[in-house]
Amino acid sequence: ARSPTLLELDLEFVDWLPPALAGLARLTRLDFASINASEEEAASDDFLQELRGLRALRCLGLECEALARVPPVLGALTTLTHVDMGYSRMCAPGALDPLASLPRLELLEFVADGLRRPSALAGLTSLRELKLRCDAFGSADAPIVESGPYLAGLRVFTFSLSAASPNPVDVPRRVVEPLRAAT
Image (tube, rainbow, N blue to C red; front, side):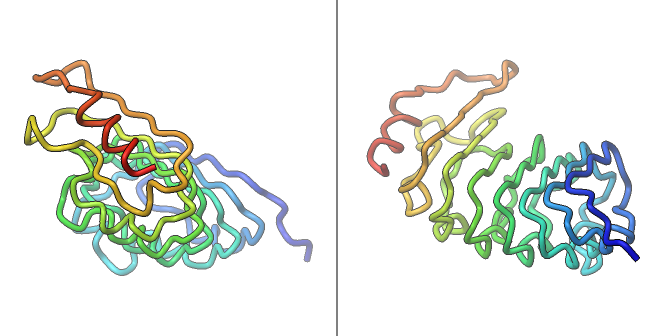
């Protein structure tokens, strides 16, 4: 039998990923707009288990508004170079921890209330592009980005604040100064 040659797959809105993905050995990019999973489902051991067989997976677009943290299964996909969490809010304690084991990660995009606890990102020394979307911030004085080793190789930083945000952001002090100090 001939091996499937599909390289990219866009599934739009799904509840679960089909088990047949494990047979797409050459798949390098997988995008889906939303997974309709609850927080409990996303925390279970079998959530997105079909991805564990995709050793050639290099790029994952994950936009799951139901999630407050990165699914733990992503930490096992060490070949990932691109993680786009879309409009998922990464505000829960430990939300980004599974990313700590992704040494090849070059692009990361998500929604948060700032990177005031960047320890999960510290080992991401291959990170070249960081896109951070924000709705509001708990503290008007805290830096939005704190320095850390993950910023050393950064080439692109995109910061966007929701138009619905109740308070403006002092961009030079809370964004630019920490980035300048880190890089």
